[in-house]
Length: 345
Ligand SMILES: N=C(N)NCCCC[C@H](N)C(=O)O
Ligand SMILES: O=C(O)CCC(=O)C(=O)O
Ligand SMILES: [Fe+2]
Image (cartoon, rainbow, N blue to C red):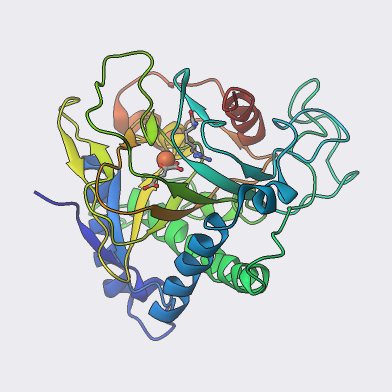
């Protein structure tokens, strides 16, 4: 058993036909319904760029702690004046389900300068959080420029992917007479609500865990504990290490290794897609247990809704799912802040 592979090129290539795109949308619907995880090819980002991104992250983590701490994260996304949870976090600073994770990381967010937040959104105390400028390392020197270009490319891929996902929601029950679109009120809903995507990027370094580990022991850390991602879609780039990232299957007990395929992203859907689709597509649990060889590096890019986007189940999905709405609706920013505050030791 392995995860489905989806070729996104018809959504990036102007000369594709609508039938090509419909095929892709159908595959996405199956992948999101059955797994919530898939491999993405045909994204148009050069292999050499992907390798450079991993290599630069690896070079950063190999620096002395003193050098890495020059861009240390100082707060957990608190109120005015902080660095908006951006920067370097050392081993064990990130916490999942109350346990310290065995990884170090740099967190980058969409640039959000002070004073730009809209009024009256996000609830009390949330207006000015997560604002700030990214903290970029001085070494390796090419890291910043390479990552800025890479993030631009990823935003293009993310936009094409959520367009395809919107189209995928039209497919389950087309009206044979009118060929009208009974499912979505608007298949561009994801595109519109990610037009100012409050994206997150993490550069993560995982030392090999000491064996053996017990999954039950409260004190035992995983490389990254079981969790779901928070927003729309995660585009994960990882080095070739095998057996580290594991995905929980729909039976709720089998863990499947999501080993890397060279040149492909591992993609998974986040909590906001689950909410919009009223659970038709679930944000799938996953975890990282690195007991293989070497020091593992991964660079997930979280393509998320706009900070201020109000996310509530789409009427069409409530109908299709046959369930009551699973959420009353709130902004993505509120969901994110609830997560970020709980993430640090
Ligand atoms: N932006 C995202 N999705 N980051 C995932 C971080 C890993 C899990 C986190 N400590 C948690 O407990 O959620
Ligand atoms: O490193 C990985 O393979 C996955 C990391 C992850 O799940 C996350 O940061 O949300
Ligand atoms: Fe994750």
